[in-house]
Length: 182
Image 1: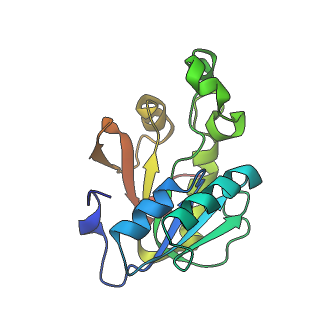
Image 2: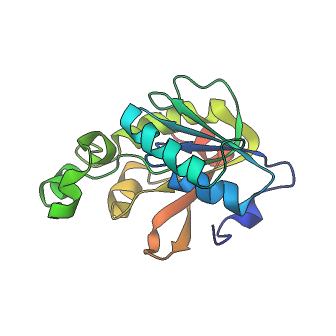
Image 3: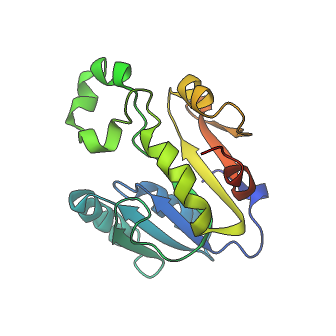
């Protein structure tokens, strides 16, 4: 919402995807920051989508944000210009040590496998087919940068500065994703 990736968008960037939307806050922020876009907000959880619906309605964005139940990209056919994703990325060692306040979160929303990159690996294989040629991915990986870089050592990521620091959120182009080894 503070314009961290504005320079990566073009005048034709109108279709946004908030993958793993949870409560819909990122979809709402995108719609508020970019008044000319439409956002598709996707989650596998019906409960999360019910909360997202409340937030979308509270911000009067029902005409610009579509909520959709889907297991990752499986129910999508559209291509997007910007994909924002806060996937399950917490590695197994971190899951065991999570502070109490995180214990209320659904396991499905947090656990990313041994190194935290299980969802991300599959996403990188599937996502280019859902991206327009100049599309970008904004991906949160929290405190798992070491695991991300170990899993994708040749991937050229642009690390974005956020309120949480400079190693929590990254930007990838479609071109970079097309070059990820299988």
